[in-house]
Amino acid sequence: MVKKLLNSATLTLTLFLCVCASAPAKSHDKEPIKLGAEQNSFELGTSESVLEWDRWHHRVGKALSQAVHKYAGRLMGTASVRITIDHDWNLTAELVKQTGNPELAKACVTAATSLDKTDVLAFPEGSKRPQVRFNFEYKRAFFVVPKHEYIKNDYETLSD
Image (tube, rainbow, N blue to C red; front, side):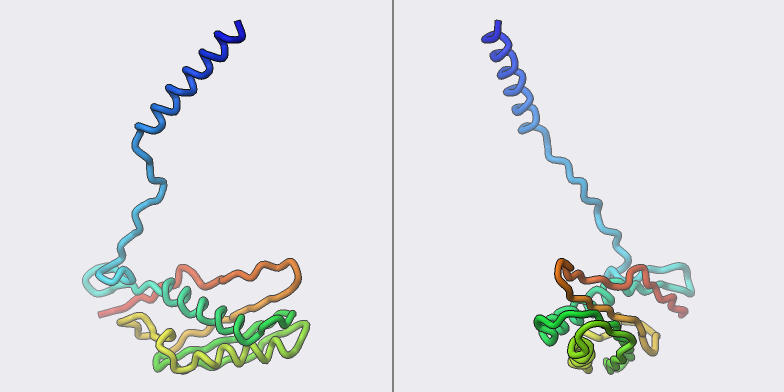
């Protein structure tokens, strides 16, 4: 009796594996939305279009994070730095708040200003914004996993 049950279970499992192996794999990833020729703008109508800034924020945030990791080393604490970037790639950094080691705050400001005039700061093509201002926060402590956060859903409406 046990032998029949085992044979039946083996046969069922074998059939199941054959069916799964022959079925086409389904992709759960959706096709990304294409916003335009460069995938960062789209037309609203005849006189307006929208410029998407998410990739810019991601690129600049990643560059800031990498620079801070380089300058801060193993220093512990938190720092909040107000970053202002203008259309000509000028970056200014101002310490807003810090806790823990004051050297970490200095390292964050130094790291941010090291990106001044670098091409990573180039605004999306077609942007009319004179500047972008945001706070960059860095936290390093025991049992804290560093993460890269950036502004999302930032759109600029352009009028023709």
